[in-house]
Image (tube, rainbow, N blue to C red; front, side):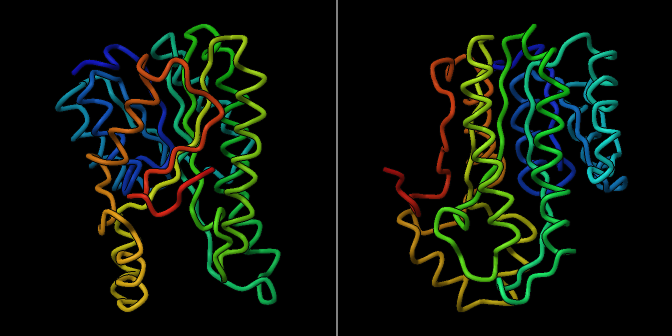
Length: 251
């Protein structure tokens, strides 16, 4: 316990799903967590749970597509706490469609909510992370590694995130900053809704996972995020960590 004691973490998309699971895992290890999310109701509910463990945690409502405002979010966190130790770029929205049917609007949605916020938050947080020798955790997807059909806008943004993560690992390493990727399969609200609509495909997916289950958001994904945010992972950077029950085995 207390692996992240007194550290300050920003988690985008932290009001629900994997983001909320990571936020809970972080506060249980002593971190002050700042949730950045568009959903005000969910964000306020989530931060109340976090404050039961770490009262100084907070919620910032922010539309991540307003890219010119994201540096201000980072400054707000830095001004409040005097430090930023962990940046988790988790938020992402997209729509499923084939290459043939994908529109510019759909590509813009995926890049404006996923890729560009990841880039701008990394850029804005860099001075603070240099000072703290901190950690960045970005998110990719097995859909990108496999090239899943009808996921072109999502896959394009996720693989772009993987690309800039590797660049950041090389550029930021001299400052003692670790930059890694989590690629999860998790039992999020979105997955459960999708499973209800596509039960046969869901069962096929689960049967293809060696551990035969989707991951728990806090216990599985959150604990790996704690590891990557802590000193335990001090000699790991530029890596894609598959937290998917063995679904994909990188070589």
